[in-house]
Amino acid sequence: MTGMRKPTKLTVDPIHARVIRSRDKAPRHYWRAEVYRDGSSRTVWSGWTTRDELRQRLARMVQDGTWREKRPTLRAVVEITVLYDLLDYYAGWLDEMDESPAPPLRPRSRAAYRSGVTRASGVGGDIAVSRLADPGVVDSLFTALKRAGFSDRSSGQSVACVGRAVKWGHQRGLVSLASIAVLRRKLEPCREAHIPTHAEVGAVLATLDPNDWRRCGLELIWLTGLRIHELARLRPHDIGQDVIHVPRETKTGARKVPLVPAARLVLARLADRPPHSSGTLLGVSERTADTSIGNWVRRERTKLKQRRWTPHSLRHAFAQRAADTGRIKDAAAILGHSEATMLKIYNRSSEDGRAAVTGAMGLRGFGGGEVIDLDERRRAK
Image (cartoon, rainbow, N blue to C red; front, side, top):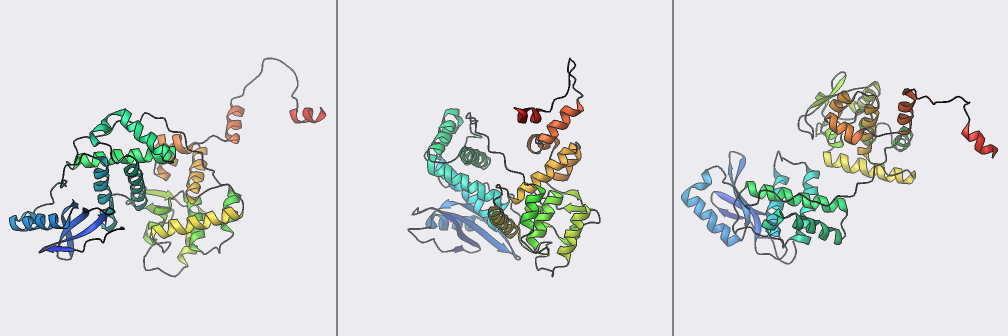
């Protein structure tokens, strides 16, 4: 925050309140009021307000005893009619998750939602929430984001964040609108990411010692198709004799991933490393694993002049190889996806695959003649 200092903590015994989020040079801040009992905390109120208004509110709660009740549905101090104010409340809710022991959204999802909220708030914050039921208004917001220099993908994600914020606000009684109109603009397809070859991955792996946790992590993604956050959360007891037991607290829930011999060798190298206080297999946090492996891959593939690929590209490579076996149902179960998702996202066409299909069809012509080597004929010309 710039321009003015963030207010200090406020206590109206037994309630303690502090600022979670602030707007630049604005008198209202997003406060969270809590009661501490038996080593734990319970939120009794949260929302945008001034320090004086909050002191009066908390005093009333203490006087009438409502702080003892289950936290009431979040209500705005003033009626929310403008998108900017709604997005501020939604952003405050996202910020509260940073200190929650079991947040409903992963850190990267929260960061993506915050970015979308910031873009939408800066471009279309003055739009009346009620007007978002009009498809033309939603299309105009998308167009304004594009004119502001954002890509089709970023603009579409920002509109989607507005939709999430409206649904969230409606569920909490902040706005009467239940959902926004559907975006009618057709988004340009994202470019297809490069799937690295075995040789390209091997060249990057060769730049690190075989026992380095980053190299071990990247090899395991190639051999198991795990996501980085799934890999970072693994603990020794999740590793079975022939399978990895992916924890339930991951993006697609608990599942079993078979272990090939090469993967067991990598796990053996990790087991030889000194134990880490975190108790995880890699010995680092999810964020450190994501950042460190990603930065290393980007740096080395750039030096090697390879096409752009990321650690997550190895999951796509695993998925493609699994789909090529033709066992879509089993491949989907390993990756934690539905069969429809496997066919839509991961089952890509390849030159060898197309040649195998046409070869297996046994196509025949309608006349005689000889087989001609086209390359040889071109050279003769």
